[in-house]
Image (cartoon, rainbow, N blue to C red):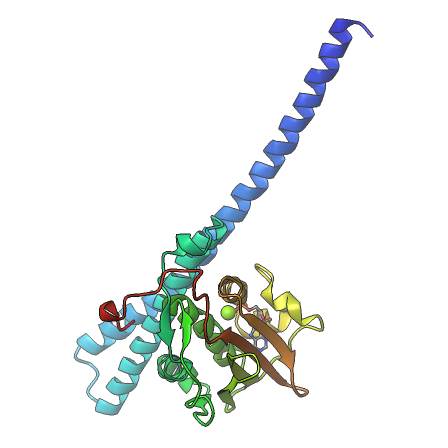
Length: 279
Ligand SMILES: Nc1ncnc2c1ncn2[C@@H]1O[C@H](COP(=O)(O)OP(=O)(O)O)[C@@H](O)[C@H]1O
Ligand SMILES: [Mg+2]
């Protein structure tokens, strides 16, 4: 083969590689645009609802106190959704950039999973009011479990994502149970969230895949990204804990998170106890 034939072949190969890369770049661009559209669409919904409720409250037309209270509850619930979504999107961009534990910049602190669950149940309860869904935190056992050493804002987002799903995908009038215990043999605290509604996929691990949403979930709740459980798993993995999904009866789904009491002791910065935030 002559030199010029060889050069021609190399150039053709490079052109093919360039074309392939361009196709990949185009696909990424489309994915990013869809992602941004999804985020703004999801954020606009609760913000519009808040705006509309406040307009109603300040118009002077609302004279019934009970009605006004109901509207305020809805404002609170919609704000909870907006804050929760915004936190997820911030976390998602950190995780997408493949930031490691240290880059997440959160110091470890002693976290009471019982107190955390009670606070989150309060936060998400308004979401369930319209469908008469109740969140019950069973304190027995969980109350007696020791604190776990963890990155509190991240662990809080793990449980928010699971509890939010439980409320979103539950049947009207059902109860979401949160229960947990100290596993002495593993020295871990295990917390389970049980809800009755739509079934999990046959291959349950699919729920932790980035962007996965079941057809049942899409029908029940069209707005969603399929990022909640992916984020939850990534955070639990960073903590070297475990997260598991299972069907415990025909229509009951259970998510269990296990976190070691000692957490990442010795592997991450521990927050100065004098400098604790109340987050
Ligand atoms: N409590 C639950 N009951 C039944 N299915 C659930 C539950 N939580 C999550 N799933 C399933 O896992 C999928 C992924 O959840 P998630 O990552 O939070 O995304 P999203 O809520 O945006 O759909 C859901 O779409 C649904 O199919
Ligand atoms: Mg979700």
